[in-house]
Image (spheres, rainbow, N blue to C red):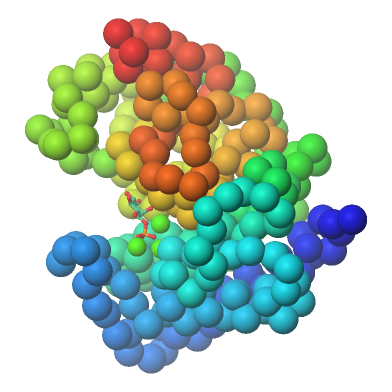
Length: 263
Ligand code: IPD
Ligand code: CA
Ligand code: CA
Ligand code: CA
């Protein structure tokens, strides 16, 4: 039998330790490399944190599988068993340019069901965490269930690039949403944007393409506060592939799908 409570306690301990490593790293110089293109950055710390977390997991739970952005985990092809889905630094560009607005994201799943979600805003020392069926928290504070919100009063998260002509979506679908809402914001960390939806700082967040490690923890937080998550056209998300992504307060999510995204 999987001891989820013990896993939760250890995961929180390791994520906080990883945060400490990142804070310490601010004193030393960073080594920055490019991945797929000059805007796709990776640093020695992305790699260090992923390896640190994987080391802890493998030592304590050799039977668990790990899916990590930087590729030090396993080649995960099914959701069977216990899987840790890790983004060591979500928002690497912010980490490099701003030293804020980034987070460590860890989602832990059992046979495809999300049990534990941790999103750690290292700089603000804010750990957003959720345990299946027990609600979501920011540090010690329980996050309330999301309240119904009208689109005119909504603040949404979106990358401004989607409002301009782009290869992934017809931008004329997105522009009317940005016009209608009270405000649109772009933080540059999908995990934090999910945590913000869970904590009511944002009412929705949408984007065209995210990987499992960007959303694995956020999905568990959102579930615990009664929010809805899907692809941009309302389909179920697949944790083994990249997806478009749309998360928000339940009524707002339904309204935006019907009136804007699925017209
Ligand atoms: C990125 C961030 C960003 C999102 C990108 C992601 P990374 O993750 O979440 O907000 O727009 O699509 O790749 O690479 O900084 O972990
Ligand atoms: Ca990256
Ligand atoms: Ca990411
Ligand atoms: Ca990352």
